[in-house]
Image (cartoon, rainbow over the protein chains, first blue to last red):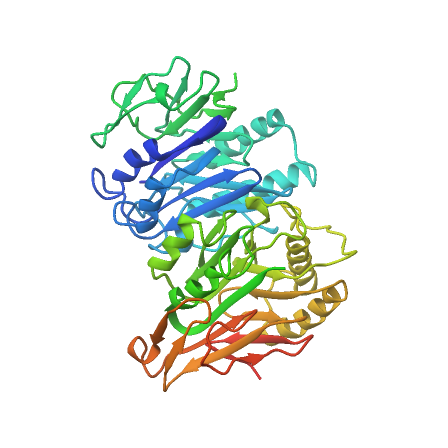
Amino acid sequence: MCQLLGMNCNVPTDIVFSFTGFATRGGLTDEHKDGWGIAFFEGAGVRLFVDHESAVASPVASLIKSYPIKSKNVISHIRKATQGQVALENCHPFVRELWGRYWVFAHNGDLKNFSPALNGPFRPVGNTDSELAFCYLLQQLREQFGDTPPTTDALRSTLAALTSDIAAHGVFNMMLSDGSALYAHCSTRLHYIVRQYPFAQAKLSDEDLTVDFSEVTTPNDRVAVIVTEPLTTNEAWQAFSAGELKVFVEGAPLN
Amino acid sequence: MCQLLGMNCNVPTDIVFSFTGFATRGGLTDEHKDGWGIAFFEGAGVRLFVDHESAVASPVASLIKSYPIKSKNVISHIRKATQGQVALENCHPFVRELWGRYWVFAHNGDLKNFSPALNGPFRPVGNTDSELAFCYLLQQLREQFGDTPPTTDALRSTLAALTSDIAAHGVFNMMLSDGSALYAHCSTRLHYIVRQYPFAQAKLSDEDLTVDFSEVTTPNDRVAVIVTEPLTTNEAWQAFSAGELKVFVEGAPLN
């Protein structure tokens, strides 16, 4: 199995603190050592870093931990291979373009007997069930909405149906973002927290590291962090329900 | 205008030496300071690094210069903005998927009155003439060959016609790769060299750096480097003719 980390904010925020704890699970405090990746939206653009080395050993991960890239939407993934060999093309997140926007996707879980027909322009490059599911999702969105991007609400209800269909094939914890919203679906394990004023201290579970967010934020900042397993020991993480799709916009879940 | 650097090899090779000289032009020995990018194929996967900082100042460029990523096909670009603002989504190279392969594209030049109809799945995210040309190229390839990838020869003749049409709108020096071949089209300035046994010393034009390739290669290695302006002072770079499309496979140009 793999682990997922997502961040959705109302102002560009760096993910150094959360990524530092998360990356530790890539080979040190946990066994997810078969590659990792992280994608940052910056405006309409995306920076994607993927590596088939473990997140603990990777020089690229060291860069992420020391270089504060600010973003409103981030998705990261550490991998323990279940389907597909350890290779760069199988590292999440995956990126495709639809409606003149980049879409970023990462998945935790394992799908069985999942072989949807791909008739359109989205085809997997690697050989994971995850990239196949991503291509299928985008194909279905394009089939349903044509060349016109839908509203977030319309997208939400379509994605709820699609993710539920896919989850019938196995575990489908996933994160998807087009840079304006972050969609997170939980099959089995996913947690989130919203950090906002008044900000407090947070202590990482995986490393001896504490940050006082009140020193690095303004009162208007709001940051949602979504992750497989809670990252800190002294904050109140909310668990998703099984089968739940949440949409995060401007640092908070939509009702 | 911008500058382009490409590498095509018969064995995975690092580009640290060439990139070090090239990156110097991104703000130090030349004026190309409006962002830069580099894409490496690794198997079927792609690592893409883009930054809107100059290649001289960018911490990501420092990583590339110190971390020898080995690849058979690399495309890099340093940008001086002519169309489109300085933003991440306008940084080359651009990446899209077609036929279950990633395609990497970078362009040097400026196209006028170029507004082809995009009816298909490839749409620009940013607002450069370059990304528009890339989307148009992929759309035409898909229209011509359908869902079945053509041979390199068939692709070559189609690309020769398409690049010639686009070049009627202005300067269109470009590089395109699907990880198996590197296609380079010259409107105005492009040079290449093939390094092979017996390997010799090479001295960078832009930095006081010399490398003895005989110390870091085997007799079977072959590396083609393609670049806007020659990178070294003591090697015999070949200039492309205006309007020429060359295809590099396994470290050498096809006849």
